[in-house]
Image (cartoon, rainbow, N blue to C red; front, side):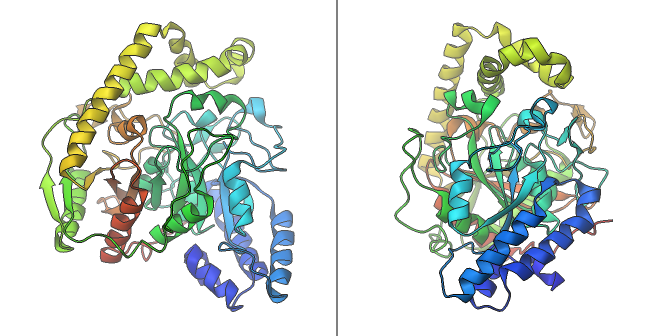
Length: 473
C-alpha cells in the first residue's frame, strides 16, 4: 500500500472510482507518510488528521452508494498557509496571526473541495511569503527532501516538499515573483504559474488583500506529474463575480488537450535572458533539456537578445502594495515581524508617483519585447533558477560560481513573467553533481496555459522524473 504515496492524483482517482482502494485507505496511508517524514522536513505546519479521516470515511460511503463525488474524489491535498481553509488557521507564517482561524474557504479551495479533494492541512511558507527560502519564527525551517541541509525554496516551499516527499499528490501555491516555480525547481517537482486571472483570487485573505492592486500574483498547483496540474486547473479555472480580473472558463479541458501538442513548434532558448548570472552546472543541464525538444521534432533556436530587467519596478510595486496594507501593523507590531521584512517595508515608504509611472513604462517595454518574441516563437525556454538550492536557513547567496550577484539576482528568470502575466512552468531537468534538482522553465504566450502544459507533458514523457525519489532520513 505504501506505493500509493507516489502515484499521481489521476491514478489515485481511477483506483478510487474502480473501488480498488477507498478514500479511507488512501487517507490512512497519507497520514502515516506525513507522520514518518514531516518531523524531518517540516512541510506541513498543521495536519487535521481526524477531520480528514472523517471526510474520507464519508467519501467512501458516498462512492459505495453509487454517487459521483467528483474528479478529485478522496484525494488528499495540502493548502499553502497564505490561503484560507474554513476551520483552519491561516497564519501567513507570522506570530501575529498564529490564532487567525479562517471562517471561509478561498474560491480555489472551495472549488477543489467541490471536485472531491480533502484538504489535510496547511503547508509552511516564509512570513507573508516574502522570501525565497521557507523559514519563519512561528513554524521554523522547511527542508529540502533531497538534502535536508538545503532549502526547498519559497514561498510555496512547504507545498513543494509535501509533493516531492510523497506526502500528498498535489498542493496549492501562489506566485508573485517565482514562489511556485522556485520551490518546484529546487525540489524537483512540477510547478505552474498560471496566466493572470486563470484562477480567481477574490478571497485573498487578511494582510495580502492589497497585493491584488497590481496584476502580478497568481495561484497555481505544485504536483509530481504534469497531468495532475492539468486536472487541478480543470477543477478551479474560470471566472468569479468578485474577481473582475478573472478569466472565463476555457472551452477545452486542460487534461484532454495534453496529448495534442502542435507539431514543429519554433522554440526560443535563452540561457541568461541577457542579464542573469547562471551556475555552470545549471546551464549545462538546461541546455541538455532544451535539446530534447529538438529530438521531439521541434526547432530550438538560441535567443540572443536581452529582456528588460524589471526587477526594481516589480519589487517596488509588490512592496508598495504590501506596505499600504501593513502600515498600521508595522507601526504597532514591528518587533514581532522578521527583521528583513521590516526593512523591506520601510524602504517602501519612499515610493512615489514618479516611481509608479516609471514602473508602468518599464512594464509596457517588457510586454513589447515579449510580444515581438512570441510573434516569432511559440515558446521560450530558460533555466528556472540560476543555482542549486542553498542553505535551509538562508540567507540566499550573493554570488554564483565565485562571481557576485545582486540581492534579487536569483529571481532573474521568474519575476519578469509575473510582471507580464505570461504562463510559465518549472519542470525537473536532472540533477547537479551534489544530487540537487535542476529546473527548466517553459514560458508561453499570453493565456496559453494549455501550450505550456502540453510542452511540459511532452518533456515529461521524454524524460520521466517521477522515478527519481529522495531518500528522506
